[in-house]
Amino acid sequence: MIYNIGDLSYHILDYQESIKYLTRFIEMDNKSARALEHLCMVYQDSGDYNQMLVMAKMYVKNLGDYKSYRYYSKAYIKLNDIESGIMELENHLKNYHEKRFNIFVGCDTSDPPGHIYL
Image (cartoon, rainbow, N blue to C red; front, side, top):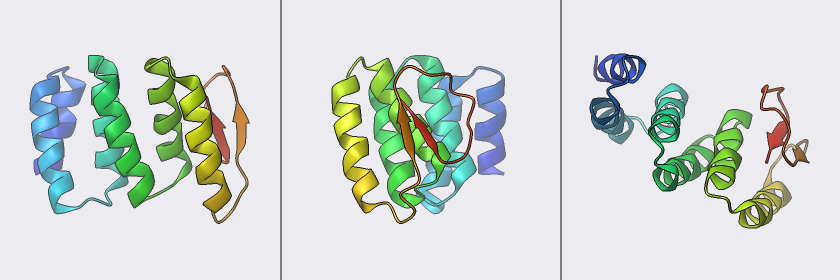
């Protein structure tokens, strides 16, 4: 129920309410991909790119799937800190178990699995 309120609040553009409920949900289940992704989306759409980066780092740490890295790289782009983003992503790639990511600078974010967009 808590996730659903946060999700619905996001879709009706009530970002503060969405943040409140999604944060509560993540406190209960910090490995929920949908909640972490939605909270990244809320911060992105509300223009709070610093919080988007904080949440994307948690998303990467807790799940490390390609969507988490997408939000991670998009946060650096939004913050206009591409160099730091590239360095961070390269460090992650060294430790990533599949090592199948390709880094593209300035490409479309159409989400093909196995790619990081920066």
